[in-house]
Image 1 (cartoon, rainbow, N blue to C red):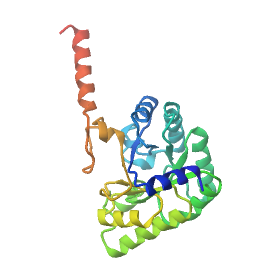
Image 2: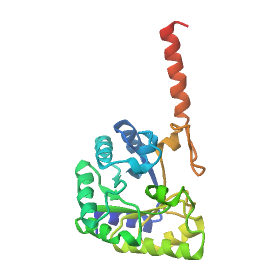
Image 3: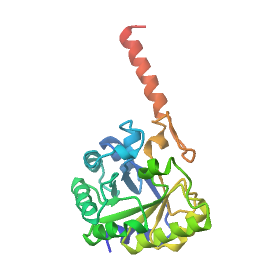
Image 4: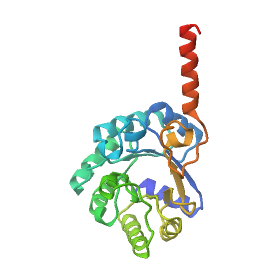
Length: 253
């Protein structure tokens, strides 16, 4: 069992709730780490909130390596999870190769999207001694195929498939599993069925952990905020205010 899997399983067994946030650069990662966040995810969500792309499908391995390395430099305590981006894990061999690259850049574990259909990729990663975090439910890398972001687990059949996915990923060696936009009752049932923690995002309070994109938490991306995200600051407003003051001071008005 990977040390991260053992650690997170023990923390779930103790009833500890875990706080997870994304980070994409050195100063943010350092601040989150020093503030006590439990896990830091270098998510391919950086495509939208850092690079201005319309979705995550344009994010490349080189982009992920660049940002994982930056985050690693700022983090001393919390485990760092790096996303495997779109089409970087189409085969077990490719998944392992790219997982190794993320680890070399500084990730303590890697995450890829998908359930039962990706267990061979997951096994290739975990058998090589690399920490792995799953991601089921709404899969952002599949947004073009699915035609948008949709809630998952609405029918009994869909809920059963999600549970099968979660159990398969746990069996394949996952340390934790992200449940994104899953019906809360289904997410709670999945959480109760696993020994490893679930990390919810838009999946209700029954998960073992909660994750947010840091820009949503601090109000740094005012152009879009998901309905489930609660902002605890308004950084965008402060940047605008400071910039206007600077402009005024330079122009002498």
